[in-house]
Length: 212
Ligand SMILES: C[S@@+](CC[C@H](N)C(=O)[O-])C[C@H]1O[C@@H](n2cnc3c(N)ncnc32)[C@H](O)[C@@H]1O
Image (tube, rainbow, N blue to C red; front, side):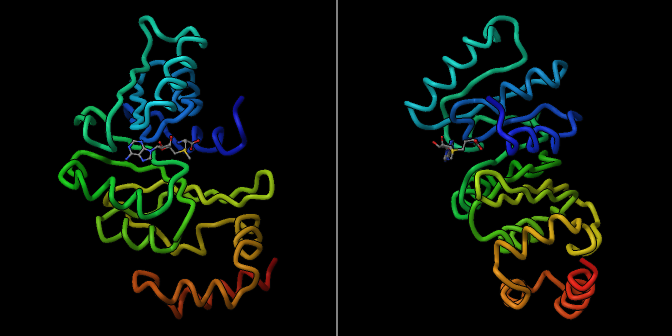
């Protein structure tokens, strides 16, 4: 039931806060989080009828419906998220959708301490966008499952991070190279974004690649 990606996402959540899973779909991540962090509240949010019904059925089938720490909401993005939820999960979505969800309720970032994001497009643009909102990379995990390469990132507010390429492991770097085909494609992509310190980045990247 739980894919490698879902397990990795649950591991990125520290369990320090109540968590809202936006776009919960089948609810597998929300269910895993509710079991893993019994003392935290999980809010599973979905805005489409079919997936929302699946979500409810899966929660019932797991026996979690009564007196459980998991609640559901049939609503859009962050609309129904209150200030009890300081950890927000946005997984399995494209960058534009993620950006729109955050911008629609931009005032709510005042209480959100961490975002766990699995963004399927424009990975480096996402990092730049989050940086503008004062969220830095706390942890990155790049993983491959069924021939798809996923970028999972935990962002934290007001966290001063070290350089991106210092943070990722050699294994992550190999997957990054695989995703972009070669070194120069990654550097070209990164150079579109000013929040990356390009020369340092290039230096670190080449140094790391040479050490693989
Ligand atoms: C590809 S699924 C990913 C499901 C799950 N988060 C995962 O990572 O396995 C994306 C889900 O997000 C939902 N979704 C997209 N935009 C949304 C929004 N603004 N508010 C709530 N749900 C949304 C979709 O209906 C869909 O069920």
